[in-house]
Image (tube, rainbow, N blue to C red; front, side):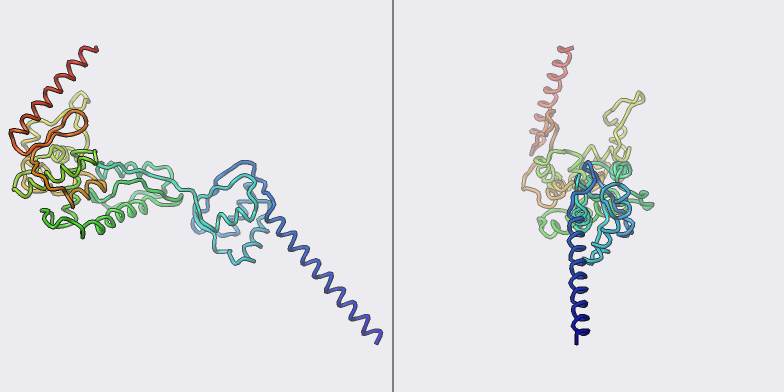
Length: 342
């Protein structure tokens, strides 16, 4: 009986000591997880597609962001988060604890980079911006990207996005916008397909970058189409000559259109062809697309630059000629002012 009592006491002592050891180990681990880390200054840390937690933890330790890769692996295994880390680029604050670092990688709130595609640029011009971006990865797609198929905007993306993925996203953004606006279009517009809407919107975009003017210019072109008049848009001539690139003379100076270019028939020259150009002449923005699909009701059929970044609109040829005369007078005043200041 004494032997049995002694054995029972020994078992109780082992259990108590073992539990204390386990409890102490748990407390130690929690303290280590919450302790300020060794990182001396804020930094960014990138996780590439396909990287494992083990490899990421090892790099974090090597880079001096955490003290123990093994402890990170244990923490993730206990929580069931071994496969939960995200791909991307993450901001790590100085002194971040191991638990904070692991949480950042799991939450996936990675650093956002941005790329801006300006309205009114040709696809070739926008592809140069995409190709030159220092954060996007991968080669440019081998296939042709149709003119006018990208939606100009500022896009946020995570490090690791490829150029092909970015282009696909920009094309989808335009498709989504058309899906939204096409069912709401004015039924009286002389536009029968979403592609025709993009073509006309591209002409509107090239005629003015001012979003407040785009509805009036869209309305003007709509009226001309309804009346069987040609659009007579200078940017369509330029696209037929240089695919939208600026025109230069033999001395390398910017120049205006030549009479011979105005008179030459191309698939885009709306002085020489009826209806719309063959393709878009640039990538139009949201404002131009919306303006073409729901233009205001006006009777304008002529417009001319006012010399101040805007345009003067007219319903009749007589009014238009008066506006042209006003613009010429403004030009002469500006030239005289410049010469006086020389």
